[in-house]
Length: 426
Image (cartoon, rainbow, N blue to C red; front, side):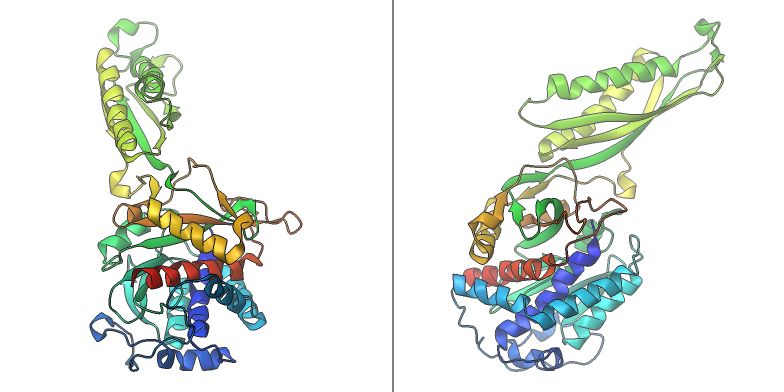
C-alpha cells in the first residue's frame, strides 16, 4: 500500500470540510484561520492538543445539507476540483513521497500530519502505536465515525475521528492503534485503497468478505541424525516433513467446503547439507488464507495438528510457530452490509452509476480487518489505472506510481462518506 496517497486523501478532506462550511472562503490561509469559526464547538473533554486552542460557540452549517442529496455530493466534488485545492494536494504529496518511512518509523510523515492539523486547529492525540495520530472534528458528541489513514470531511453534526495509522505493511499497526484507544466512541469506520486494476476514479467494493485472512507458519520437525547408508539407525525428519506437506494439501481439498475459498501453501523446506547424512531437523513453512473467520482459524488449528501428528507417525517430534508475537496474523476483511451500501450510495450519487463496480474478493490481506472486527466497517478501492501515464503497477511494485488526477476524486468520495454518514445517523 502507498500510504502517502491515502494520507493526502485524509488531509485534503479537512480543507474540503472547511470549504463545505465556508463557501465564501477564498484562500487556504483564511480557511485555516477560520476553521473554528465555522465548525460546531468541540467537547473540551475530548481535546488533547499540543498547544492551547479554543473552540468557538456552535454555529449552524451553511451548506443546507441537513439531509444528504445529490446536490451535496456535487458540492463536495466541485470543491475538491478547485485548482488551488488540486495544486496544494499534488505539491504536498510529492514532498512527502520523497521521504518514505518504514513501519513504526514514520517520524517525518507523522510530523507533517500534525503540522497540517495544527495549521487548521484540529485537535488530536499523539502518539498512538508509536507514530499514529487520532484527530477529531465536530461537536465531540455522538454519532462518531472514523476515517482511517486517508482523508476526512468535516461533519455537519457529530464527530469525525481521523486515524493516521502507521505500519500497515508490517507490524499490524491497526491492532496497536485499537489497543491505544483509536476506536474510542467510534460506531463505524471506512477506508480506501488505490487499485491499479480499475481506471482512474472508479470506485469498487463488495458486501461481506473482501480480502482474505492471512497467516504464516514455520514448523521444525526433529528426528535423529544418522548415515544415509544405514537409515535404520536414524529417525528421518525429511520423510516426516514430506508426509506433512502431502497431508496439508488435504485440509483444503477434503475438509473445506468447495464454495468456501481457502489456501494452504508450503513455500519452504530446508534440511541437511550433507548428501550422505540424514539430518537431525527439517524446517518447513508457508502461508494460509481464507475469507471467513471461522475457516481461517480452522486452518490454523488443522495445520498445527497435521504437522505434529504426521511427525509422530514417523517417530519425529514437531513444533509449529504462527508468529503471533510478531503480529503477522491478519484476519479476513469483511465489509458490513450496511456500511458497504453506504459507500455504494455515496459513490453513485457523487460519480454516477457507471463509476461504481462490485469487485470480486481477493486473496490479499489488510490489517484494516482488525477494525472491522470491532465496529461496522467498509473498505473500498479507487482506481488509479492510466496506461498512458504508466500507472499500471501494483502498490508493492518498485515501479508503482499513481495517476494524481485521482486525488481530488478520492478526497471528495471519502469526505462525502463521512459527512453523509453523520447526517443520516444524527
